[in-house]
Length: 207
Image (cartoon, rainbow, N blue to C red; front, side, top):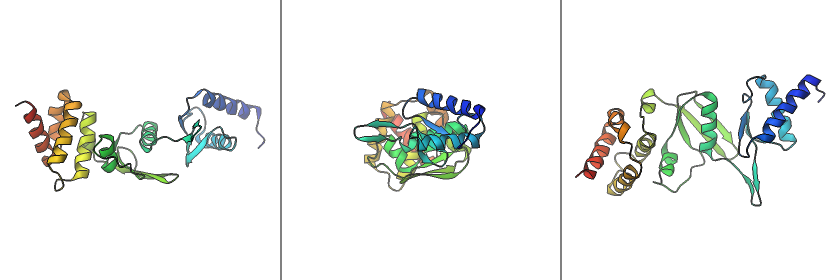
C-alpha cells in the first residue's frame, strides 16, 4: 500500500522497536499507546506478511523464537499473563492449570481457564483456547501467591475426592513454599473445607 512520509516514519519506528525486542515478546494493537490502535494493527499485520511477526490470534502477535526444531510458542499462561498485564487485570489459573503449575498433575490442558478481575472472554490461539471467567473479588483477596494457586488447585480436586495422597502432596507444597506472613489473613477468606485442611497440615508441622 502507498503510505505518506509520516506513516513511513511510524512504520520504521515500530519496526525498530520490534527488531530490538527479545524473541518471545508478545505485541498487541495497543502496545504502542502513542499511535492509533487500528493503524498499529494494520502495520503489525503487514509485519506478519513480511514474516517479522506471527499472528497468534486476532490482535495478538509474536516475535517468534526459531530453533532447529521449529518455532517456540509461548505457553498459554504466558499469553494469559501478557493479556492481563495489557488490560491491567489480575488473573488466577484454575482447574488443571493450577494443578499442573504446582506439580500436582502432569497433564497440560490445551484449554486453560483463568479467573480474571477484567472482562470475561475466550481467545483462540491455534489449537488452544484460553478462557477468562470473571472472578468475584474474594478470589483475589488471597495475598500469598502460592496459596492463591493452591486454593484453586484444591477446588479442582474437590472435597469429595480429597484423600491422604493429596494431603501428603499439599503438605510438601506448604513446606517448600511457606507464606507465613500472609497465611493468617488468607485463612480467613478460604472456603471452609480448604481452611480446615490447611490448618490441620500447618498444625501437624508444629507438633
